[in-house]
Image 1: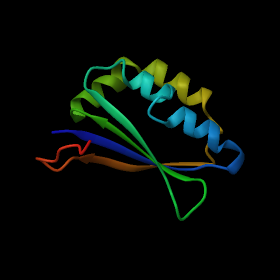
Image 2 (image 1 turned 90 degrees about the horizontal axis):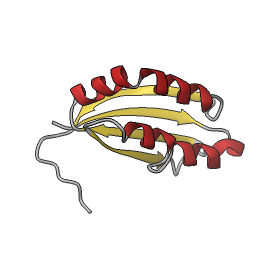
Image 3 (image 1 turned 180 degrees about the horizontal axis):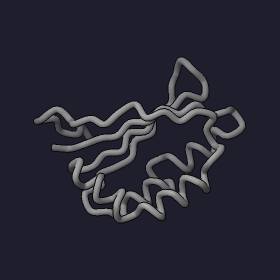
Image 4 (image 1 turned 90 degrees about the vertical axis):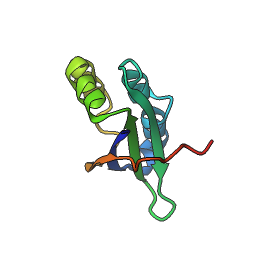
Amino acid sequence: MNYATIWEFLVPEDQQAAFEAAYGPDGPWARLFAQAPGFLEVRLLRSREQAGRYFTIDRWQSAAAFENFKSSFAGEYQALDQQLEGLASSEVPVGAFEEWPGQEDVR
């Protein structure tokens, strides 16, 4: 069953372009995740109601795949987190979720 982690970020106006580049589907987070087996994709959502409010959805094939990533890439994860520190004024984990069975991506 696919697994997703969701984060909420508040980003100052002068950091939004850099944040979008870093946290989007082609950014360094996605490239790091892509090195791990079981990674599916990163989705970046920007609020239409509140300027500077974003959500990221990191999708994995399973919770085990995500846990294996965290173990195998702990050093790289911490280094990238430190490198991108300060882009967001607030970073809050929303939670971890399992995708409803039978859902297909519409593409």
